[in-house]
Amino acid sequence: MDGGIECTLNKFANSTKLSAMVNTPEGRDAIQRDLNRLERWAHANLIKFNKANCKVLHVGQGNPNHKYRLGGEWIETTSEERDLVLVDMKLNMSQQYALAAQKVNRILGHIKRSGQQVEGGDSAPLLW
Image (cartoon, rainbow, N blue to C red; front, side, top):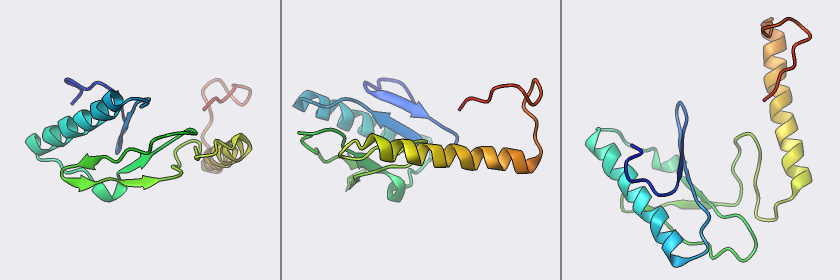
């Protein structure tokens, strides 16, 4: 899957994230080439991307907001994406911190309710 990929590729259990800083037409073309490579890899391995979950997140002021295709279909643009933190077009840090804290608190609450103990006992620091 990683063969020939020019941009940063992060693979998780059920998702893949392709990212790069794009401030030139060459950067835009590199992302499109990588999307084409990923689509060919998926096709060769009989895997389909859930294109409804594919999104382009543009960050920063003056961003040219390039459009990209995956398998011949335009990828939807979004102004925010939730993983561990929210990144929005305005880069409102207080909003990002609040959403990150909410997510971490939910995870910690699940751990506490499940009765799981962190290795090292109750006094061990838990970092996310």
